[in-house]
Image 1 (cartoon, one colour):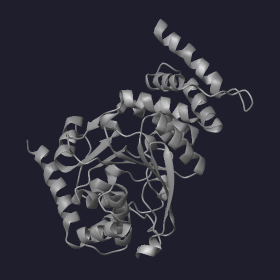
Image 2 (cartoon, rainbow, N blue to C red):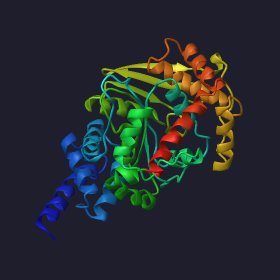
Image 3 (cartoon, rainbow, N blue to C red):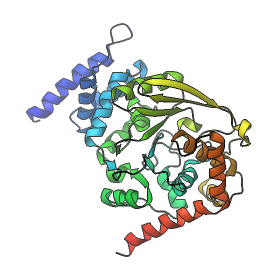
Image 4 (cartoon, rainbow, N blue to C red):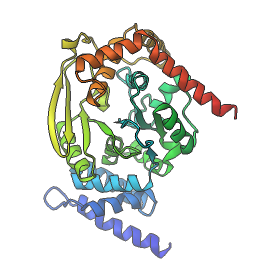
Length: 356
């Protein structure tokens, strides 16, 4: 064992003592300590026993905002970077759970196409199917739409973002060091707090609207504090479907806009805008594809949800002055076939790399 590895394990013991000492003696880590703890885990300097103990203890105790910020620092240091061209419109960056969807039909791939057709750039990130849900992921869904976004070098993703306004960061291809912690999710049977980084981190560097999904209210308030420390000055938190950023149409949408550290609660009612219905259940990829193709033709069970989501996000990012006009704009994109045309454009772009 090298002295560096030995030193790393000893340092990690100190971090572990802080998070694993029990309800009355456990102490929060500083931002720098949390960054170091994640660094040691990603680099394999901490032992598997240490990593497992840390992740479950941290989950039980719940991470503090400065700890999440420190871990986010490490993600930003090692992770891929996407940048906008000078003068380009700021993108919407969606933070969703990487372990996918299993209960409700995903809307975000279709929302993305409508937004792109309106000139609104979008940045997504995700991985392959992973524990604990092993749900359907972005790479699966775009693949169903005949848009294969796996195995692309980061330079190609950046080129696509420059030309089409769309980037999907695929963790196995672009952030492989983060893959090292996936097996622990299976063994622990619970999402560790490090999974929260999937909701808080974006590969986009520069001005953007970061949309972060949440389930429980304490998670939302921690995200506000952590991202303020991290320098994010335009944030939207969403109590979306399955902890993601898809706005439901079967209930009120609980959101909050945080600008420069000041949060404004926004509760939106799809019923008031003609988009209310039961949220469509997930069945399988073939059924979803059929529903998605119908929605792109302005019909079928997903159509209202796409209008609602795309319209709301057009409004959130200032593409429409009112929510109603955002929904109308989204409806027009679907009616005129521009969302389908956007998908055709992306497919043509992707094929161009297959024939070079």
